[in-house]
Length: 75
Image (cartoon, rainbow, N blue to C red; front, side, top):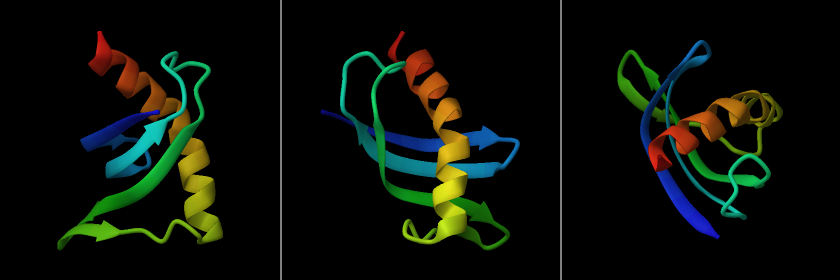
């Protein structure tokens, strides 16, 4: 497993800070596990609750963007 930290990723869904790990060297086929996700708000970073249904859906929507970001970083 490979740990990752994304200090800032800008998406159409917002600006996020994400940490987690991927289960495989090949990012396109790897399962991404998010350990922490924060969103940039008007007062700074706000930690999101990983067990909330809306956040689970958000992570599912962000996963392809996270993979692309990690692939670009690894090249």
